[in-house]
Length: 144
Image (cartoon, rainbow, N blue to C red; front, side, top):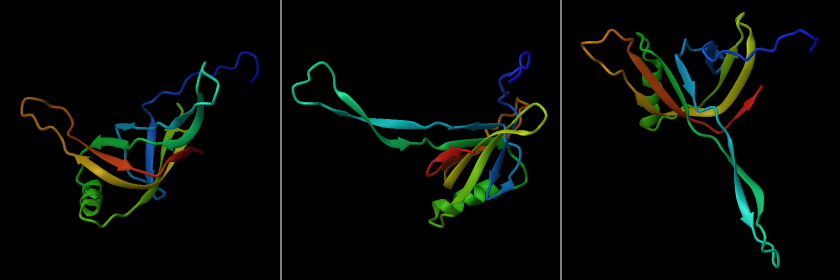
């Protein structure tokens, strides 16, 4: 990077979600982009000062995608089918864009399927957007 070039942080409000290569709509929120490596402790005989911590398996929490409720019932249908035993796994991506709308970061998740669907909170005294959310179990993700 040349002197004087700025490297500003990316804003978290401009992103897309793809499922099986298709952008599936504007989501208001995507959470669960997290990975953790479990550790296993190992005691070495004669060494009482500490225990060795060895890396174990990786864990990935479920992804939660939230969007304004539309006439499309695709997320509900996907969840309903999976909960009835017809599990259709999909690969997908969460794509963070820069200020110009160009792809800045992409997290690809694999073999996802819905495990929870939440409908909107309906209140007669509010004028807020009705939201739905879907929680996806998956087999991990990687930054592309």
